[in-house]
Structure formats: C-alpha cells, structure tokens
Image (tube, rainbow, N blue to C red; front, side, top):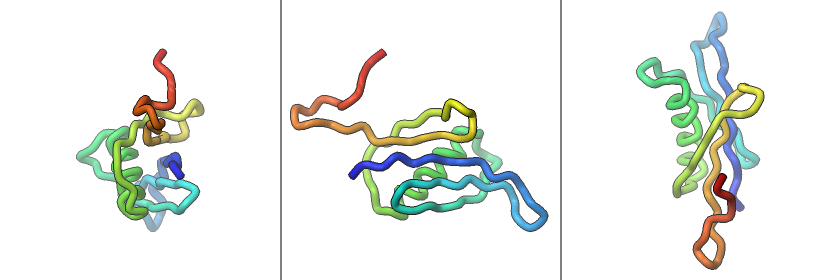
Length: 89
C-alpha cells in the first residue's frame, strides 16, 4: 500500500538541536537539520530517510501543507494502463 509521508519542523530545545520529523502510518524517523540545505530540502531529506528505513523505492513528489505546518510527500500511483492516478490542473 502506498503511504503519504508528512514532515514537521522541530525547533531547538535546551537539549536538542533543530530537527525534522517524517511520519507515515508505518513509522517515523527524526533527522537533524542540515544548515547547508534550505527548508524544502531538509524536509525532503527527512522523508527520504523514512523511505530508506522502510525500504520503499521509487519517485516521491511533495509540497507544503495548507496550514504551513510541514510538507507531504507521496508516490504517484500508476494504474494498469500505465497512466498516473491523479489529475493535471
């Protein structure tokens, strides 16, 4: 089953540096913020780390959540006819 990955920024605390948490129905992973990357790249790196942990492969596409709380990454689903299950705006 294909699962969406959501990411969330976790600000620094007295004991931890800035992090990003990636979550799906199957599990989660938290990674340290890489200051060499921009915001979007840090969230994508966290989602990628979760996909690797779960041994998921393939293309992921993502975008910001409507409430600006993080990002969501999904895999395009291709039906039996080879066409993407989605829409073009």
